[in-house]
Length: 285
Ligand SMILES: [Zn+2]
Image 1: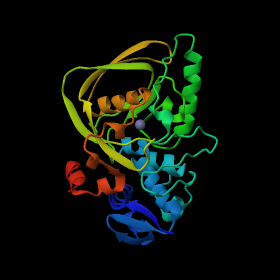
Image 2: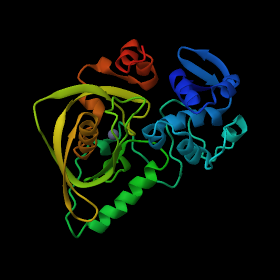
Image 3: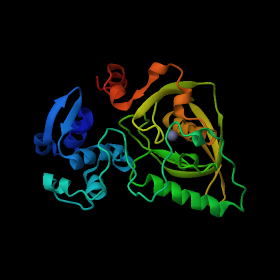
Image 4: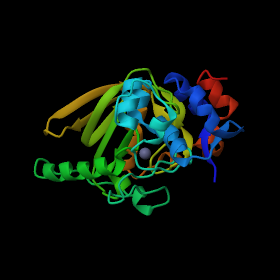
């Protein structure tokens, strides 16, 4: 068995935390922009750290990476410490995170008819306790998965609640360099603030390992009820606006692949990320 890691991820990660030279001997083969490892746990750790919102948002600060992935703050990294990573073993297939806790609610995948149903609004304030209960299930389902956001229908609950945090940077998505903290939104809605739209890549927990280009309104204003029952209004642009529209679409039973206009703009993450077009658009080419 060999376990694959995208070369760019390997180089970026190992250079940022200074373990490039120590990890290179672990690479058994390097071909087609993929590094092959024989050690599944090590490959998983590298993939996982790239899927990790916390580490991505903070640009892999050494302390955060250590706390999150090694559960301690070592003075320096070495290969034995990395092998002692306590996180559960996840699939080493690029961009295919597995759920840490087998008892957690399952994430429904593209093709499941439930994902195409429209979700019901919460009757407030009487259903506020229900919103809190569903939120706990959503948190459980995504624990350790490093996703940007999730909507209740993705765990099979057809109620209008979403949560997301916007990372400042992300290996796959075109971000704005500005992080927005986690928001939990009950009964969200939005209005575009102009006719301007932009076409960019998206991915989804329900469509693992794949990406697609989708048109989204560039500037929006969205409203929601927070967990305390207060109405909130937020203006959002670019990536922040895109994330909102993606999550909102889940409540309408719309997954991003349904919105991809040119079918060539939909495919496997590793193939897209290795393409010249993608590399150029991210300043890598
Ligand atoms: Zn999604």
